[in-house]
Amino acid sequence: MGDPTRATIARKFSEERVYALRRESGIVELGRRRAHRPPAPIEPQTGETSLPLDLSAVERMGSLELQARTVVDSVATGRHLSSSRGFSIEFAQYREYTPGDDLRYVDWKVFGKTDRVYLKQFDDETNFGCQILLDASESMAFQSKEAPVSKFGYARLLAACLGYVVIQQQDAVRLSTFRGGVTPGPTFAKSWPAYRQMLAEVEAERPTGASRFAHSLMEAAERLTRRSVVVVVSDGLDELPAVIEGLRQLRFRRHDVLLVQVLDAWERTFPLTQWTQFEGLEALPQLTVDARAIREVYLAEYRVFQTGLHEACLELNIDLFAVSTDMPLDHTLRAVIQRKPGLLP
Image 1: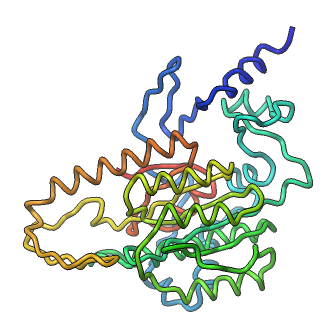
Image 2 (image 1 turned 120 degrees about the horizontal axis):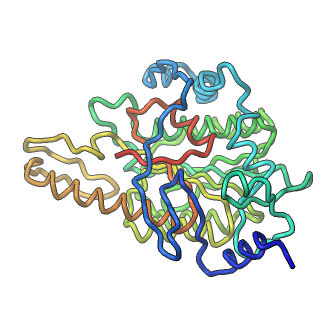
Image 3 (image 1 turned 60 degrees about the vertical axis):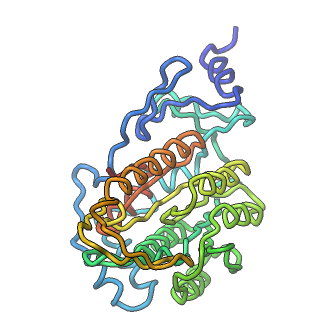
């Protein structure tokens, strides 16, 4: 008789929907039904410390390359990033199973330890391409009074740091911006000079124009000719069906997708209590309203949106990192590198 464990896994992943134990993302399998736990917020790991990085000061340091190096060095203190578990090993040595993959290449030892199914990759497969998509639409320009940087400033620096780590691992990366579509950029960078040129182009970008999230991600998916890791850094502020459809297009083409949703703390808590003039973004008009009167409605809509986004990412097997600009960027970078998704309350 065959291995019953292999037979069970083969049957499990031949179904149209993939049911997996993903405890860190909040899924628990109960027969054929799924129960959701509230996911934990992104936090530093036990024994790790975060340097008190002042993001507003980091932004004034000089080039985007220098800013990224400063943040990455603060995270890498005491250890070598390229050998840390998560970003390097999951990307460069293993990839997660998807329906249709050959079960002969499943690493059963990893499955026994983690309850997650990974395929072994061989020498000619280990150099991966990482496509980072940075939202440069006008909504990313928002910065509340207490925030150290704008959403775009935070997102751009995080994207630059992630690319820095990929190059440090001697893998290929491409950093592109998107609004109504994806900005045409160079091919994947595999060297420091090529990545510096890429950073210089992104540094010149300013957040303007309306976002077409689904169209942009569909365009990015069509440009990627081989299976890649795609990191989307965006506030995700578009119609929820459009956001989900864009992510679905990437997963349909079997890319490994991470979504880093960057919000301002005010967008999560709506602390305003007086008559306030709201500036219209992405072609919307100004609006003066009693903030106290709409606060509960806004927060209810925010919770509905976040819940829908979280459930869609679970369904599509996408790692979701929801962060705000008042959160230490080195914490966010460490969480993404170690593939530890979380959703802030």
